Length: 113
Length: 113
Image (cartoon, rainbow over all chains, first blue to last red; front, side, top):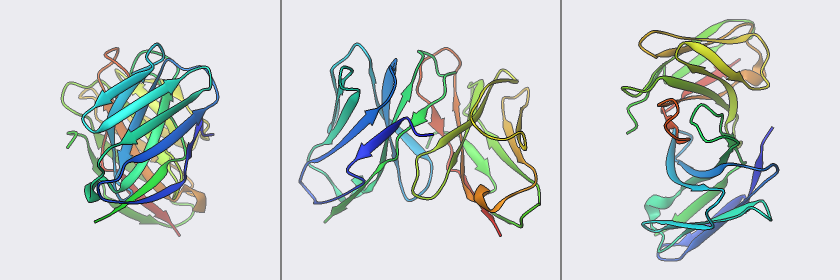
């Protein structure tokens, strides 16, 4: 079963615009990660935010976490055509990589040149 | 590139057959996790191997089994294939107890006819 749900399911924007996708999850977590997947291939880790953090930045990415609402958002600023991909949030209950990742349903982002 | 490789890239089998998928983890990583991703869905955790021992299993039947070898590479075996087993199978490696990020291979696309 999926832990989380991403919203929206699909998003289409023009290059240069910002893209925001949201993730909601069901149970208490230790940390939340965002991954990108190009064309049904392997996933690439983007950013991790721990349960005691509220906001984190990495390049053009900004992630927020609201544990009281069990939700997270990923903002991609000044999007590029190369950002076209599916984006997944994933939660773990523990602190170690020996914990399984529980993925959401994903947001398909298309960025038009 | 994560350094995680999977073989084969694509595979076509018929219902009732057996299949073995292979994964070579990133150098130095001692943990391998397997995920099944159906079309349009997020990855679902199958099981994980840590230092050659199974270290957690998702909601998959016993006909899904695995192995991890002394060099930390891994196999996923599926017996008595069913049509619903058609999916992208992803392996992810990580270094035990070093943090929750996992590094994914490109996946094996399995089609069951």
